[in-house]
View 1: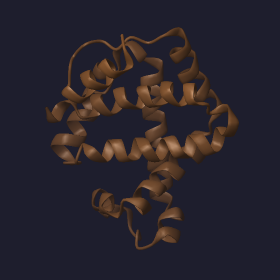
View 2: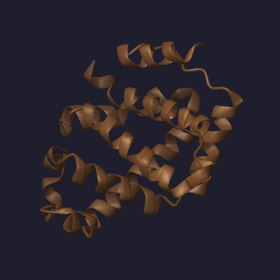
View 3: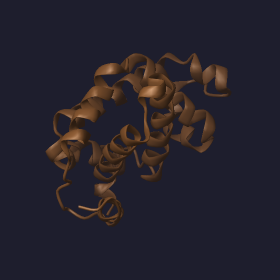
View 4: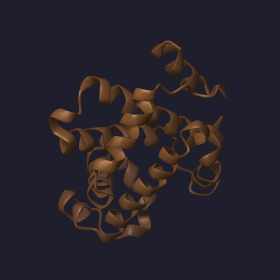
Length: 163
């Protein structure tokens, strides 16, 4: 399946099952085995809240989010960042059924929390930056392509309820 068709299918909400190469499967699992969830998750969520401050509106119950230092030091941001990583771990373990794995989360985020689905992409971009910084030279273009394909499937699955 050409790379562009995967992207097009994800953007249109196609229910086609994503095809993973052995390299992609191994790479995604390797990435998640090399990163510390309680470091990467909080760093990615912190970056998202700082770079895209309008995303803070979904975290009103988290207390002080007034500046970058407050966000970085906020234990609720840190805890939720780690929770996000464990949620992604569920997708890693269910690569062939990410859409159904995230059905409940999609409903929660769309119907109860009313999260703008574009924010999932923003967080995915921040996560890519943090993972790239953590992995350094190991985060080659090929590794990034596999990781971003994975994140695109996750983002699409989380946004499925909105379609």
